[in-house]
Length: 402
Ligand SMILES: [Fe+2]
Ligand SMILES: [Fe+2]
Image 1: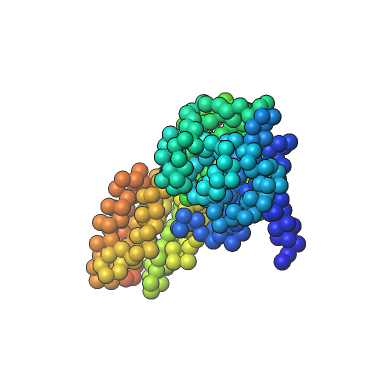
Image 2: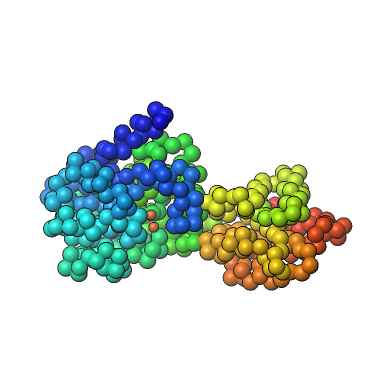
């Protein structure tokens, strides 16, 4: 075990003091390799839970995945008598945050679960919390902990309908749940990880991007708050919030770079050679281009590149007369994640017949992506195909330069 990991693991067993009376009591999941069963994680994740002490009451904000309970309770008990917790704030019902709620509610037997009206429904379904132990809060409601005030901000669809933020007024700490998160096990603070923004962006792309309208509303709601620190549910605690707020403003606006994303799959190298030709044509024109073989690609990384590309070119083969299943999945991902990509080019290779063009049109029909050209290539590139490809590259270049 290298020295850095050893130090971090030792820290793993201790709470982190954010400021007097506020503690991080979360856990680090170094070995998690995939999230929501579709997005690969490169450097693990964390489940952040926070304890806030006022002069009269104690609140616990979110919990951790149920597999990590023994470590979680060990930490919690080192800073508080669990029976003294009066409020368990459930910002979000998803099990990565709330999986330990049943045991917390059992141990903190006098505590109320604080959540939105929708959260109350989910608390019953997921965690069997009875009505009499739930306190429903609405946008702007407060709870006084004695010298410390928790203010609740409804933030629906970031990431589920019940989601809310909790703002600690006197300390200027925003407990933002999934919003502003990053899947990273390492680091206590944002400035511990030099490339944290890349992970925040990947998180944005795979979790938040489909909800851009809701994200804009949430940013507006918090714009008047004095935010000194953001305490998200995954990844390091952000003590320099300016950068992430600036980035979230860009991402919610759907600001794209003059960048082209080429995604391809190739069975017999024909499609690969077309993808490489496209790459060199864009590169030679000075256009930022990223190319991924979807068979080898990391889905989280591709999603991150969907978040800031202006155009996408799909070069895909035909199998049994239809689109190959791997690009089919990525087209579905485009439909699901709703990236701000504006233009697409489609190149289909086939041997004896294809309906892939119709399938692609169907999959993209509800998106705001304009298909500039669909080019069909029968095994090898004909002279006509070469002209069509150059014309597609020129059309994309013209769009990017305007
Ligand atoms: Fe979530
Ligand atoms: Fe989460």
